[in-house]
Length: 208
Length: 208
Image 1 (cartoon, rainbow over the protein chains, first blue to last red):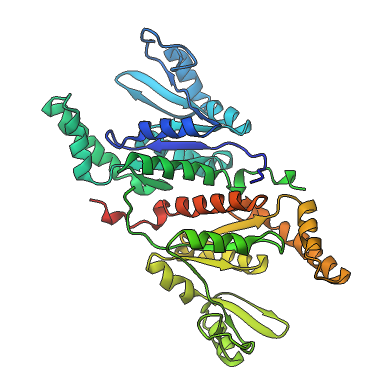
Image 2: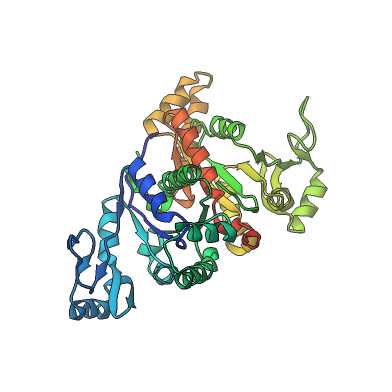
């Protein structure tokens, strides 16, 4: 099929631990060209082997706060005393190149992005919200227990968080129930291909 | 992949003569289950072989006008003295059964449906607007000329109408450039599958 030049999109992807979302989007990005990953900023120290600009952009606390005040962040949060956030420029620069970006983020961050999309037409046209869920709560619990690597307390906490996150499902645009991985991969791949047909991101002036 | 019960959608499909849209959606409905076609109402007389409720719902002019006044139509038009229109109930009843409906309509009718979607949340959540275009104006002209069945005057008129319709492309949600048919069929099939993942039509209360 012929294609037209277009702006890229940002696929905002959330889902509880046990939903298999990272396996899913990694599989799809390997099959489809033109999909990159958003690199976040953080004020925590790099761990051995982590590279600035690849794993994270490592910022000082002062830098981070200055950029928050300047409105440079699409979303950010403070976790255990460290800041984490996504720069608007990280998303915009790729979008202008027609590159799609996967942004794996928790529901709180996604809701900040939803608010940004509601007030900024640039982000309204570029952000697409995808929730990846297990097929049922029973299956979620089975998967988390199946890891067998966690204390009862930590498992309880994960289950509680997962239930909490699942209540946000309705705030997303698309829902993928990840039961059989290969089916979920096919669905996610079809979704990305289809969202590439969105008129709002196409450069219609190219048509002649 | 697991699925959830959902409301159906109406795929509002437009595209100029020569875009190949009907070949496209007929091919896709043959491959995918759960896709039906919307049946329109008309006041023109049935032609030999046409069946009421299959080809059209044949209404008297008085009936049609009464139903227009009652607000029963999602869209309607008067062409050469005959009315044509789509009942809201034709779309709603299928949607509630989780059935997707293809509604092939010209750009004027589609814009009436767009206005309906803007004021009625029920239709806002169910209507999806798809434009099917040839890959270029040159190719469109080639296809129309290639039919070789038309007078120069009739061809001129078709070309003029096609150019006119193409200016509405930007008012649709999705654009399929139909260059190689099998690619366009794959794209359209992926689009329908993806739109079935739309959270706004899912019965999320089913999740447990």
